[in-house]
Image 1 (spheres, rainbow, N blue to C red):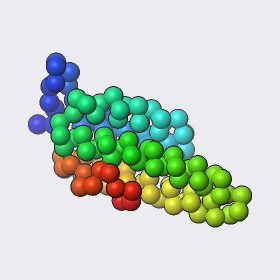
Image 2: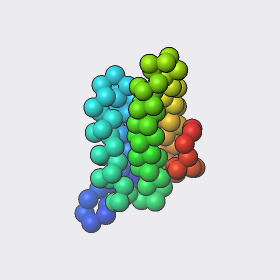
Image 3: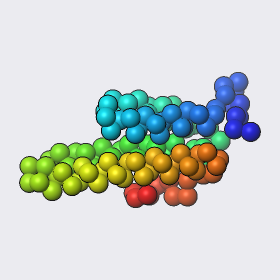
Image 4: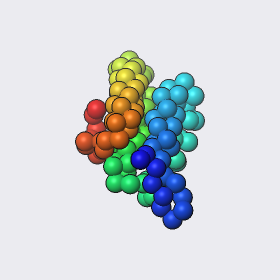
Length: 117
């Protein structure tokens, strides 16, 4: 039941799970986060409604995370930036784990446009 065919193209929750994994791997290898957001943009239009919330959540996670990285990098000169970057890392892990948990249960994200967890 996790597969829906739209215009003869299968859309599964597996691609959304890969995006969450790419985000967490992106903590070590930054380029995987960019690959993940591209995948989310590509797959969101063809997904069923409950899965669209995951892609929206992933896209917002990427862009809000990019803002945290930008601010943390600038503020790292005055030491507070390191705390912003640490917060971003914890925030990203929590959002990814929360998303994967909801994905495994085939549930929509409650608030995909939220800034926090």
